[in-house]
Length: 344
Length: 213
Image 1 (cartoon, each protein chain N blue to C red):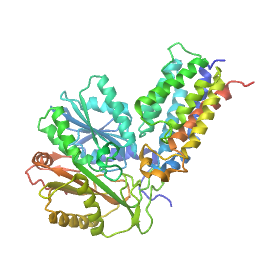
Image 2: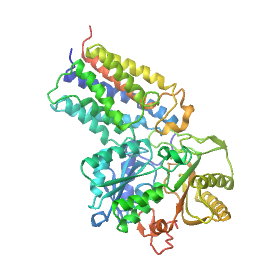
Image 3: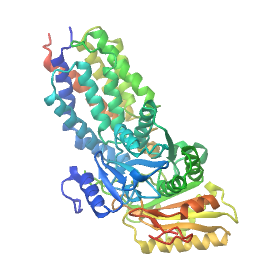
Image 4: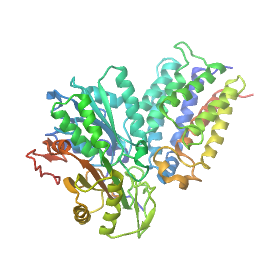
């Protein structure tokens, strides 16, 4: 089937989307050479700064979270493809305000190769950089082999926690330690019901059958978990939530962050129906949702499905989550309740 | 027999042309168990090689190959960018600035050096269904080949082709495809396909340029 997307030339997708994104949010971010999206207030910063890298085609992530209180520089590659390591080092240099740079890398083969090479090059140049890897997909490896777990939506709250810890004036080591503590206590499971179309090639990636869904897919719907007949919102919510609670060994009385991240073509209506069921189930287990986010934050084109994210929270992490931030796709006023942009 | 500078340019031109001819096929294979864009990345690298061939001044062979490596490292291409960047920079490793002709011993050393460089950045080895299933046997065949540059390139390309075929019988252990496990049986690894094309391009480019007897 012919691809039906509002695009111009396939070669210029990333360039054109970044130009539009930067123009729409020019009060907060600036697009610099090398596909770097930079926080407008970076130059005034005197703190640890936060840099990430990743492919495009997942909007609003990752660049949608560049701004005060979250990311300082996002290095964008191309559609679904990581940027090169040399560009990453340039971004780290650009971000460095003398207090060190936290470099957040999602666990995908290309991102990790670029990230590891960038770390080596940065260390050679004497830059003060710490790397935090987000790897929280519970579907493709057990917790003791978390190095094999894919990085899904967990990178976004990690940017928030790290950005807030940096804004609070922590040293690079302290910021990295907080980010790692959060990242080590998170878990995500993704479900897909329809595949994404690669917007350059027009090829449909891994499309479940008409009456099927697949729990345990990766960021682009790539499989592994196995197909099963389509289930209701409540049944799907219960299956997925139980896997996450087990993985994190969450017990009664604990506080969690719950994120429902739409993959691109699943409606907010569906996400709220699933959220409602999650809240009922957690309440029954005496687990409190202390932080949440429901919406599209890390998508994969028109893939239908969602990612369910759960993280163990404590008072310090909650303080960082609720701290003020001002980015195109996450804003918090920092009054403690922090309702804004669909997040709590 | 020696590989001249012009022979080397011809080798890289053939690699770029073979890559360009195969971009659609590479993306199609990648869409089965990956994210469907290996051909897009390979197409960018091919375009980069061709433009550097057209713009080349009188830089040394070493600098030219290194510039192809850094060109790949600058491309936004997921894992393929760093892997091919390191492979090409590795090829340039044993060369010195005044090496304008390459003899058999140097050519063998270039392949060995590329393999060592990749060993530093990936844990993948033979059997893991990655481009290493092509690169490792091709390098070993080059090392064992008679001391003649064409024989080395022919042996490497033949071993690369066999290594590629083997990947159809393997289960993916790296990259996105790893999560598909046994479903990957019967499909070659897409990185192995592009690496086999690299060795084929080296061979054809040299044969085209060097008269054969």
